Image 1 (spheres, rainbow, N blue to C red):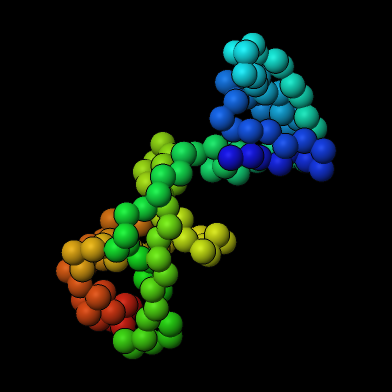
Image 2 (tube, rainbow, N blue to C red):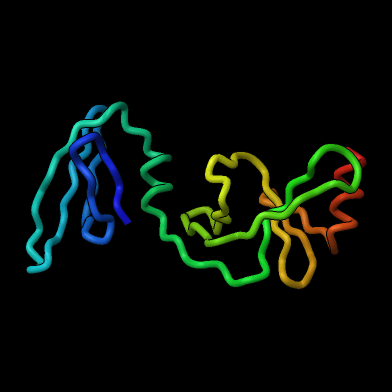
Length: 136
């Protein structure tokens, strides 16, 4: 995977051995094919650690049968989005779907039919989830 630091700098995350963040620049060490480490520096806007942390978190393919569940309006209306992969960080596993701008609480439909929320709630099935959502 590559990260674009600015208009001229793109780095391969497989080659990063160390990153040091400053308010206006990033210093990073890369290892090349000969296993020699080179130090680099790039300027970018204010460093946002959360964004860099998210970009560097490993991503693994999802097994078939996992879906993000979205409610559309009130009642029993809902739609599903396939989970393509899982981003793994120090907090847990987070689903990666087509909507990369998703924020806040999310719900995952598992292959066995249960639904788990990012906040820890578990529902036996889609009906229990929708009933709970209608009661909010």
